[in-house]
Length: 310
Image 1 (tube, rainbow, N blue to C red):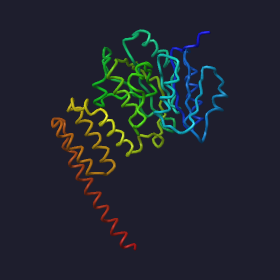
Image 2 (cartoon, rainbow, N blue to C red):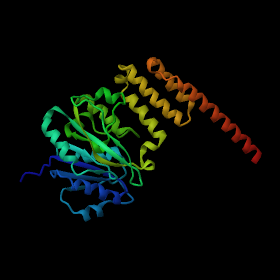
Image 3 (spheres, one colour):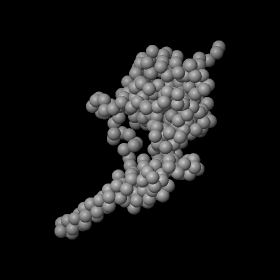
Image 4 (spheres, rainbow, N blue to C red):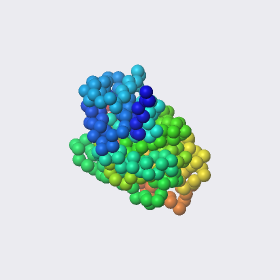
């Protein structure tokens, strides 16, 4: 008997959020396109999702439990490696798909055949009160399909729940980097866009429920570390493109400024200026000096207050 091979494998990593997972899985099962499998990889040790899977009771769902906490990248990689399909779609346990998401994207996959290695789409973003805060669509040329330069320059961001990627492409580039503390999705797509072309379905087909305190992007130290590791990993590509490297230095400088580490902020701003003086924003010096002065004044007042208090 031939093993069932779906056209798309949907990978859903989950961690201690069985209540949210139900909604995510339902949004997949409610797709107008039905030829898929759902691979739920459970990375949560406190609240397992097995009862959710049992209650939904759909034979298209494969449930995998990590024996120890492995993190988001490793959990996604486990799902990819267990997928039967040639195409992998991703959905986070707190996000949802609109019913026509897979159908519209698979139509593109079928039309282009082997000419593309990934398809992505736009998304609506909602806050924790359920209010839509923005819609992300892309101002891209319809004929454009090579996104590497745009991605490397940070001029394009593709959100993981909007993606469908060919499995053999993910195998060739080496999956998600499990060593990165942040920027895993961005770094993966740098490698993917380098070796294949893609296509954008410029419609908001995904509902991203954005809870600021739950996203790794809210941790400034991990954001900085992730950016610096990406820079180190792709240094040769960045060196060949001074203006793109300048932009990347500037972004890291901004993160250090947000952290109030003005010494390292200044270091990266200077690196940015040295690589591309035409794009240099001189107003950062004023902002930097103002921040340093305000920060120093605040610390002096705080010291005086503590002395008086003691």
